[in-house]
Image (cartoon, each protein chain N blue to C red):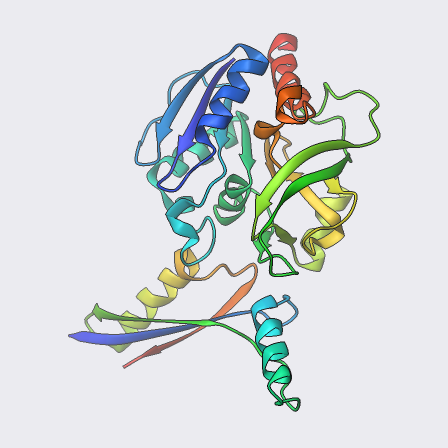
Length: 223
Length: 81
């Protein structure tokens, strides 16, 4: 697997994402600064990591979504390259229009940092094919703006198209329809608030994020 | 000419404004129990060089659509003077 992890000013999970991809897939990961106007060639995966890009000023992910590298990410998305946005990465993908909806301040106003239980709503995506028949999975999350919102029509189409990939078992933040992660219509762009990059081996408290990366590896093997 | 631009941004009606709710709760706690529907927004002010007011308004609208507001959740109002 050939992957790139984007780095914005204020990213703080970029190294975690690199280690997660390397450890779970044995792949090669390049770190790509947000000012770059080209991406490494032949990428199978682009990870938009968590953190607080631009200090969350204006809106979380707003300024990062306009970074030069994001124009290249949009082109890669169109070509069908797998794109994974985690936490702030999810916010950036929504702000850039690569995913529908937006992330609002948590309904309880609190920064929520804790392990979180999820259901896998769609096991047929390229990000979830390696999951088995587990009822629920555990990852951690840490955010103040994880409250997913979409207007009624958008929400209906997200649901009808099977774009909801993960839901919270217990809604921590007011997310509409308990949504924790969604894919785009084409299925190659995933955004999620919980962190698979912090849950890929038992020593981290959970290895439930590992199958997500294994799924992407499986996609390459089947190609 | 240099013009003064002001952009008011609020969450759209129907989008939960938790900051507004928190402020409303605090006001209620201080005795202002007649207060309702508090919304917290933001105001951006800046100077802008433009040929005329109409041109400036067009530019500021483009800024709002591209960066300043997220029209999925927010509405904006522009003042140029």
